[in-house]
Length: 95
Image 1: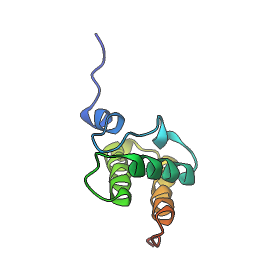
Image 2: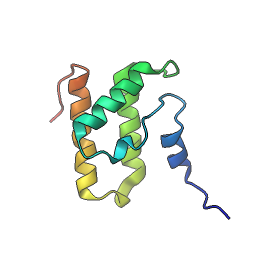
Image 3: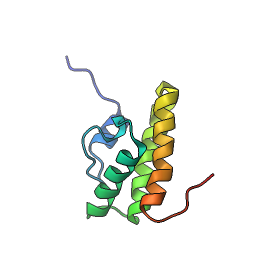
Image 4: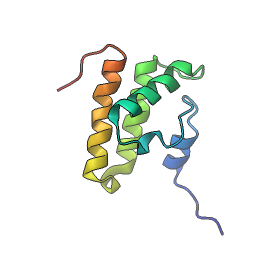
């Protein structure tokens, strides 16, 4: 019997808004994560918000769903990717 995936994993893998590149959240470089999310958001024809908001929502969703299971190093990389994402869209980074 196959192990049932959590609904959050299904959303991350098969988002209705963005077609994510494989293993995007496993990358070690925040700039690479941001660039990948930016490409996905700009390419999407199904998203309901502007590209930055859609990309940021997916990144935040992933971080929040991982919760306490996300190691500190991974959380730092993903949080840094938020700043890189803002910069990629020409917005100021938050402190």
